[in-house]
Length: 188
Image (cartoon, rainbow, N blue to C red; front, side, top):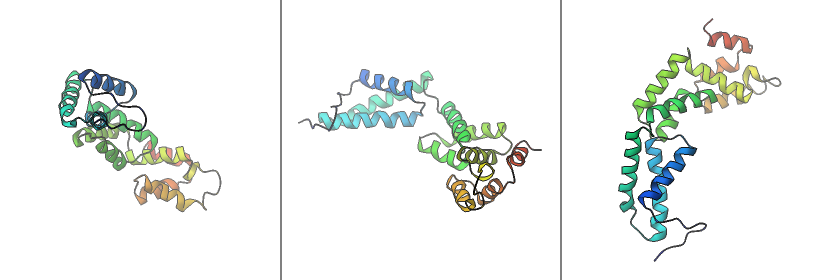
């Protein structure tokens, strides 16, 4: 007995439909092998629930497809980690935040460490640079034009929520001007 879900009824899972879904997902998103596996397994679960099948039958298809994509180079966790870490760093996410987000996507710790070491090579002080990126983007600290003293605690809390240490948050928020922070970043 098939159970109808709200909305569009999922198709039955076939090797061709899984590969098409995987290609479509990879065209739209950069991802890790574990995350693609998770996405495809959700599709399998929905289809199995609707068509009253056993999801374990299709789980082997998902594993074989993900392994084939890894072997062919379509999925590369190290390259994904490097690109995603650089993107998160530009957005102002701390080292700890980058590590947490990448491991949540199923990236192995050695790939995360390699991505972070590549970032460390490019930036003198990784967390200071990320904190400045975040402060610039949110217009806090020296980038705040008005009510800087009144909003100091709120700005410190915003940096703390991003995973930066209290000392680093104070260093960024209490900087006298932007040129001082940029001089610190450039090691002058």
